[in-house]
Image (cartoon, rainbow, N blue to C red; front, top):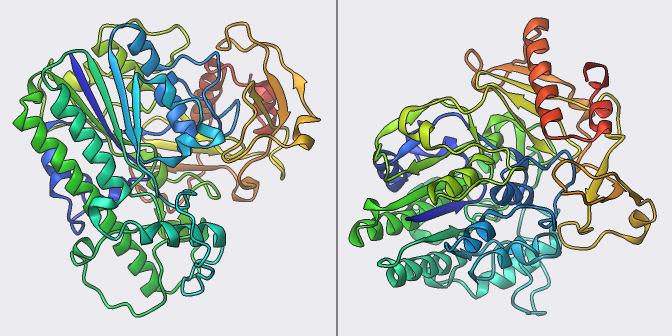
Length: 489
């Protein structure tokens, strides 16, 4: 048995033809949909980047217990479990967060790994002669903008760009190992994450009039730009999506050439989506997790049932993908894994769950049953009480600060920490979401989530789902307090 995961970052399903987009040039995503099963009800769990990848290893939600960070010593890593059971696992990626303090324990769980450098503000090439990025609209990321400007000097040719190099590594793995058995390839690119850097041939797919300042990197915040600038940004994103589509096509072509469709599972997924001006917001993390972020594209080909060109309505989540891989290779799931293998959902749309939790540490705790989305906000400003539970005290790009660590307590073990007591360190969210309030949306009648509804009976049902799922996740007691749900427990 063999398996490939092609993973993109920040891929908004509304930019893809299989999900109804009629203006983005992405024929290979359409070809993929015709060759696989397309999931219409796929949702994230823990966000953003590294919390999502922790789920891809552990198969359980983690945003209620800690923010961005490494795998913990008590975490069950699916690539490592596969490796320990005789399945060769390989990671080819340009996702530079893997090599920061907050992601440093992931890549060594694989049998082997490869990296290409230069995405976003990756501290890659040194060039002190570049001192100014005043030609850009976005001035909130000055250090990143400078480093990104340096990096771009070294990737003007497409073959030198991180995505191209990452796919080259993945394709090399397939050519080298196509006749071997028992392997898993995770081919993962940071694109189409911002900044939206692509060559002119992809931009030419979207001709439009724009003579403003350079603008291909949105900030995370309210839209303050002109309608023309917003449209330009969407075209820049579309151009990068088209580049992703082109490299996806290389994988599909090689699978046919090497006859891998006969015995190789293919999963094409993303960690989350992105707001491109919808709801008057850019980005993620600082606003509610609307469906442009939380409702993700997912395509799976399972050679055991060979279902293709079909759609599935079952509610699935990121935590189901590691469970699916373990079941596919005939490896037992660890007892702490909460995701479910999708074999029957792929074959016959068998239900997977009634409802699912998703969110970010310190933000709304969200719940969906596929029709309704419930966003439960903190009951007071400040997101308190909130704590990180960890034995790996690192944030995205650095260790916990001394002042933070001075607040450390020792917590009792959680059910998934295998008897280990963790540090309990005062936490904080990326933004204070209390002012947004609690919201309930009916996706059947309001797919754009424009008008929250007031329906006490439906809210009661969604609260029950939320509390049940939080308890199943062994959420800390203060999370219920923070959300005003303590009385429901």
